[in-house]
Amino acid sequence: MDDLTSWLDNQQERGLLRCLRPAERLGNGRIRLLAEGSPSRPLLDFSSNDYLGLAHDPRLIAAGKEALARYGAGSGAARLMSGDLEIHHQLEGAVAALKNKEAALLFGSGYMANTGIIPALVGRHDVIFSDRLNHASIYDGCRLSGASTIRFRHNDLTQLSELLAQKRGANKALIIVESIYSMDGDRCPLAELAALKNRYDCLLMVDEAHATGVYGDSGGGIIEEEGVSEHVDLAMGTFGKALGSYGAYVAASPKMISYLLNRARSFIFSTALPPAVVAASLAAIKILKEEPGLRQELLAKVRFFKDRLAQNGLKHLGDSQIVPIVIGEAGQALAAASRLQDLGLFVTAVRPPTVPEGSARLRLSITRDQTLADLESAAISLAEVVGNPPTPAP
Ligand SMILES: *Cc1c(COP(=O)(O)O)cnc(C)c1O
Image (tube, rainbow, N blue to C red; front, side, top):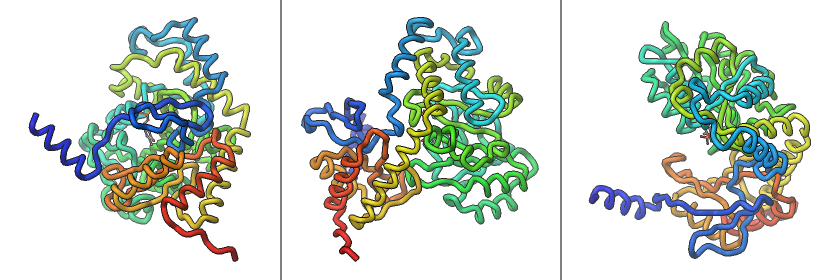
């Protein structure tokens, strides 16, 4: 027990202790914090991954309700036992089409997908080349696999090609990247990665958690936008972000999918996703296809917000709907987030170990639920808090 106390006290002193904060998302770009001492008025929500505002869409809710009534609350078993419902296959078909692949497989969550897929593909005698900024679930998958894992500098393909030349070896090799990075909000150079993976005969796995639904003509992500699906062996993504639902998938060749469903332990030994969740995901994919205007509206808001930041003298990282503003020390980032909260903005401070020491930041997610007026006033509050004086008119 003393161990726990001293660890917790130490985290607290360093401003790194995390705690749960109950909240209610109101579905209009606003969030109400419920913890004692929180402001009672709703705050403008810059912390949600529900980029298209689909979580509260009446069509997703109706689809979920209908599936709940028809199939029940739970799927009753793992897919390979007796939990393999028709609706799971419908969603897999929709995902395969969205990702321009012949087949797909559902997983309970993105964390489970990455920790299941990677160890199924590579083992002790193999090698993984993983971008340094990859999500924790990818790291955990790499560690579970026992493969030798080489982390290359973020988006540094010069270093990656040197490492491939030196360390590719004779066994299996897997390159893993994200198409939109969650903490820097930037993208990977997918076409160049595809060329490298072909030159060095590796498997290429792309995590599209933050890109699916937001990019590509039918919402298929950066893989679709760049037209490289034939070079991506494993197109992984989640339903819990822009698709407003929950769960995850991988799209691949039929051979790869039948291999994974025999080998990925997080798929085999876990109960199938519940029907209501699957139905909501299906409804979301249908909306993505039918309403490209949702994506265009979101991206127009992102451009608007970034213009306003620039006008207010604020710099940001990234090239997507994720807009990080680097502050520096963890304590400063926390203080900035707390002052923003007083001004009516809910923004998360991202601190080490999630990001490197000294690069603690405010991470703002732009969603379609925010109005231009919301974005305008947020940029002004940010300028006030982050302390950059407005640039004089030219
Ligand atoms: C969110 C996220 C995951 C995890 O997905 P969950 O469904 O939330 O478990 C995996 N990879 C990336 C890049 C993510 O951003």
